[in-house]
Image (tube, rainbow, N blue to C red; front, side):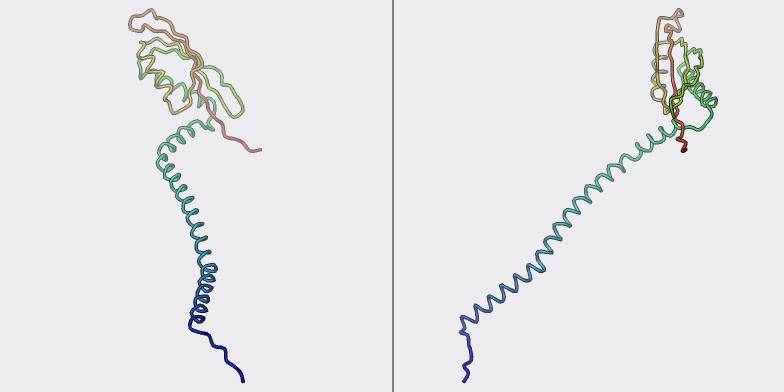
Length: 181
C-alpha cells in the first residue's frame, strides 16, 4: 500500500507562494532587469543626442555669420596673376580714398612671396582732414579683403582744407592655392 503524499492547506499556500516568488524572480531577472538596463542606456543615448542637437542648433544659428566669414576668407584666395591682383588692390585703395575725399599719391611696392602667401604693397602719401583720414582707415580695416597697415607717419599739413599729412604703407595678403606635387 502506497500512501499518497498530501499537503495540508497551509503547506499548499506556502508552496504556491514560493512558486509565485520564484516565478516573479525569474521574470524580473530575465525580463525586468534587461529592460531597466536598456532603459538607462536609452536615457544616456537620448542625453547625448540632445547635446548634439543643441550644438547643431547653435551652429545653425551661427550659419549666416559663418557663411559671411567663409566668403571673406575665400576672397583672400586667388589664382590671378600678380599684375591683376596689384591693379585690383590699387583700385580698391583708390576707391576707399575717393570715398573719403583724400588727396592720395600711390607708390607701388614689389610683391613679397612667403610660401603660399603673396603680399602686395603700396605706399600712400595722403593729404586730408583728420575725420576723412580716420574714416579712410576705418574703411581699410573693415574691408572684406585682408589689408594690413604696416607703417604710419602723420604730421600737420600746410593747407587749411587738408590739415593732416600722412605717409602709410598698406599690404594686401593673398593666399595661393596649394599645388600638389
